[in-house]
Image (tube, rainbow, N blue to C red; front, side, top):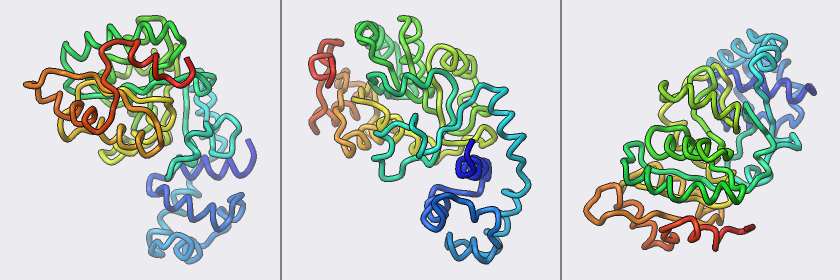
Length: 291
């Protein structure tokens, strides 16, 4: 591991270091070689932090052992992929705020496969589950990997249906690998790590925070060639993913629902705004860019 990647890896383990801090440090010193030598005053000047905050960051940074962190990643079969790594997806680099690096467990080759993001309500019901049981298997036969966020409901249904169909799935999670959320999906996460790929922009020790969930949605859409929304209320995190996709020029599909069901409101709003309605996998396959 080169020195720049080493310093970037250590930054990820500093819970008080944010995306903007890393951006400003990379602007100041692209290879990060000056980072270990910075004083609190210098770091404060670079990042716009108070000197007290900068001192806290540096104390946390210098308390870390790179050798320990690196060996822990190796022992847990975890990869760290910084933005300059050739394995880092080009599509993520085009995001307004690309992850400076991400942690991954599983098959990195999936990053080069055709991918469909599937997102929807955490309280998705039997209708959503049956819709996915109908739609996902034919997509798997076309070697399309399913990307989702490991949340309850539609995310869980999507990952499980992909695995059940002997297909590949990618889970993008909030927080680090030591703190899977929801806890009941820890076993599912481990299955995905063995049969697919699981990734996050947060170091293993970082606990999930509420703001990380909408932030990870940009990665779900950014990794994918298209996005499918299944069951979404009028105000839904799934609509955030769809919004990211539209901003990124990615096709959005939506499964219509009953006009009396509250989980149809967000989906029907997307269709009104131009999302392609989906009644079967064929509706996706006819539009999918490289079938």
